[in-house]
Length: 480
Image (cartoon, rainbow, N blue to C red):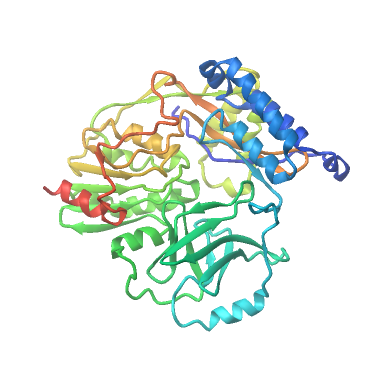
């Protein structure tokens, strides 16, 4: 079978009492992270073999000193995060679950504001600026932005917190603005200054995007140097297809996240006849951040020109890792994602893993060769636009797509987080942290390495071509 990758699933440690939680220290948290990672991460042994045991021993000694010196949970988190970065920069992480938020002086950053009064004030605004109520790209978090003098303060709108937690500040210094983000688990750091796209979108470079919840203004004229196509690209969280000209179609896919599967398939199905009659197709996957290869399967027939070789993955079988499968398959939210055949294949693989604890288990074939009966005449040329925020599943898609004679990649190098993959998230015994690590490794390593390197574009779009002009540039290349 062609094994389909899945997404992050959280598992919580049970049986932890409040009394136990009170005994947790930075030392005990580090011991838990280290033991959990060493025993369960699919990439641990690969990095030790690559960097050497002595380098790892020295790294541990330095980390122990930082752990002993940590005076707060946030300082402890920073030490844990630095320990993890010894292994890789992607598909890994430690998330602090409390609201402790020290600034550079070690003072907790909070923002005292009356939320009902703020909402009333915001509802009366008649001109679009940074002030307002906003949501993150995922829609899960809500933020308020209030102007104070020449500066702006952004804070969480979680009314269970008193006072509100400070999220970021936009300060005016002469003719320049500086934006500082107050992360949960690190010291404050600079992020790109926001640009108002249209009237209801704040874009922080490649760092992220917020959408206005209140008050929502008519889009009107795009106020920045960004054109309408780029404005739509930034604002839209669902896939869409539009005609750029008689010979070129533009397909925007914001993410291969599983919750986008039905939307992606729908756009492709509705426009299939149009795609098969048009000479050029641009697929824009910028800022995708991964997901599941289940989501791009309907795209592959349009790309196909010859058999495609797909390197297999092997999973590290441990009791903790294997629990991902029943957790995922039994989650009501995932009930309709896979058909019965796919669900049974997952259960069969889970049973196989359970029978081989402590081993790496091949998910399917060492090399799967994808052969199709049909090679479509159109589209003749396919351009895929990429950037540094493409990783994981995005890179898996690109590795398959690059084998087509029709396909060229445009943009910048991808992030490089593919070799060690299929992330899993577990909670610490005291409930202070979530640790993210990986369940599988790609059989291509060390001969072909993507992690920390990324995938190179065929056409590098340098800094003289602004991101809002990338589609225009690609369109010109395809139509020359």
